[in-house]
Image (tube, rainbow, N blue to C red; front, side):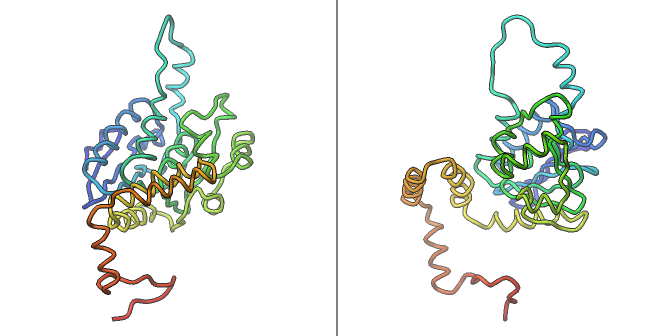
Length: 268
């Protein structure tokens, strides 16, 4: 693992990259330095891993935007001519959301504001019983800026998102599960273990299939009915690596593990 004095830690566990937000004394608040360090870790994971997990060191996943940096920026706006560039958060979070490998988030403690926006850039999320979720920007005089208007709203819907922003309401782990923020709810302290377990299982899929799942599905969801079916047809007709035929042959010949109903035990 990278040294503990870095803003982002990186560890390789077989085919899984484990990336950690590492500002526990600031509740893993996100500033521009964190975003740039995260970019480096994400690109490294793309090169070295088949799946990745993101988590937070300390007692929280992330409390979101570093408000001190935000205040400094508001108090000292740029002067003169400057080039408008794509928001760094949008760019880096999109590297997670629509990159070549799936990401699993392990959430605990505060997962609010920009922390929630980062979590929802991942493809699968695990939360333990300490996790809570919110969008307090409305009470801070600011607005979401890490892709929340798109990602958060598409997961929890306008009504829930507006409630969180207008009232400052926080959702606990049970409510987060109900509103699809997390798909797996586990005991306190178990989110990272469960996330790694899921990532290792996902890593057994072909790289090609995982890429299609995380890149084609969200685009179909954004498309019309007819365009969605057309995208599906084009995707199904794309070249598949030889591994696909090999896996189908193993299943048909009884060499691969069969699917079991939930709760069904394997028999020797």
